[in-house]
Length: 147
Image 1 (cartoon, rainbow, N blue to C red):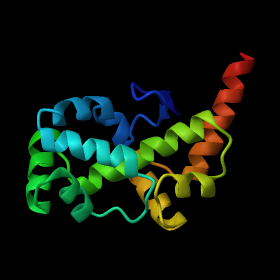
Image 2 (image 1 turned 90 degrees about the horizontal axis):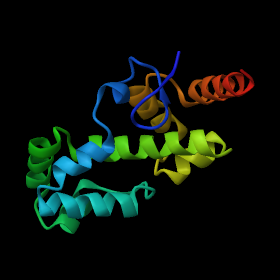
Image 3 (image 1 turned 30 degrees about the vertical axis):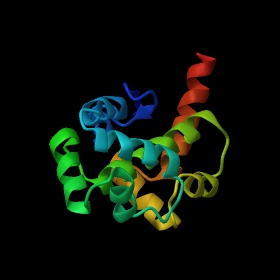
């Protein structure tokens, strides 16, 4: 059973994303640091690039890789890789809910190198595989529009 979460899309209640603050709340917390504000802008601009590295983000933010992760842990309670992965998955959820893209189009638009990586990260954050989510959400949407 999926419930519409504060994130704006349907999530299983037990999913990791359903238990966390929204990305907007995370963004508000990390904006206490100017360096992290620059990181956020970098992720917004570059999340679809599958070759993003921590070193690129640190350089763009003007700090070392270790310091960047220290700042993220302090202000956002996460790491660069968690933030990037979560950002990508939430973009995938938007595409799954709003448009009729194939899963291949979605994972490649959101910066995942392979369907295996996409499946693993999606399951980690959402609690199910992308094809299961797409099927369940699509059928739930159709049922609710006829009631």
